[in-house]
Amino acid sequence: MAVLNRLFFRCTRAAASTPAFCTKSSLNDLHTAPSSATAALSSALPIDGSKGKGRNVQWVFLGCPGVGKGTYAARLSNLLGVPHIATGDLVRHELSSHGPLSSQLSEIVNQGKLISDEIIIDLLSKRLEDARAKGETGFILDGFPRTLRQAEILEGVTDIDLAINLKLREEALIAKCLGRRLCSECGGNYNVACIDIEGEDGNPRMYMPPLLPPPQCESKLITRSDDTEEVVKKRLQVYNEMSQPVEEFYRSRGKLLEFDLPGGIPESWPKLLQALNLDDHEDKKTAAA
Image 1 (cartoon, one colour):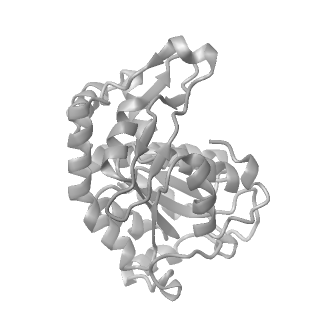
Image 2 (cartoon, helix red, strand yellow):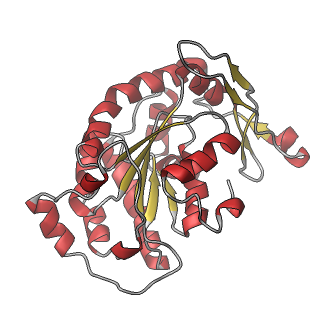
């Protein structure tokens, strides 16, 4: 935690470059007055008036496992020129490295449990330190914070501009998780599930086509060890229990954008850009997934 604090003290950002947003909360409340502790920490942040490539946004993505946080965070990262930091990727990298945390993480992940704050913060601190060394500014966090304590720690050391909460029907979430595939050679992420849910109870029909791999990857697809129905349902249960306080934390500060995914990427991406007031961005058509 001390490392994380030091890193955020050194973080630079240009507040004037942050765009306005439409949220379900009042826009006047988007940047609420920080607590005295946060104000003291914020005042210690060095000010950098230079304009780099990125827009220096500091956003976090919330949402159930499998909802698509990584997909949309990566697209926005490319669009805005800021780093996409996914704690899930950090965990998987640590697992494959066979380092000191590997066996402990493997047991936690395979049981569908949440990884402790201490482990996540340690992994995130290392990634932020690498970003600082590369001169990166701003970030889009994916998978952090997941607990109220993590949200409070993050708020205590930097000012998050916006928390984007992606939502999707549970039956679609489960199907998406079970359909996820990873190319063992290039690392590409795909999904073989074709989701077609009839509209009922006032909900419109939802269609999400599969995201199939190119021919060269078809024979190299593997399934994540934790993408079994039992583990997926456990992850969703644990997440739902932990997520409410985090959502309320950002909602009470006027920083929560709740976005219901209407379907697959072609349908959802333009609407997400519109919700973020980025629908007229000149690079939107070339943002990679």
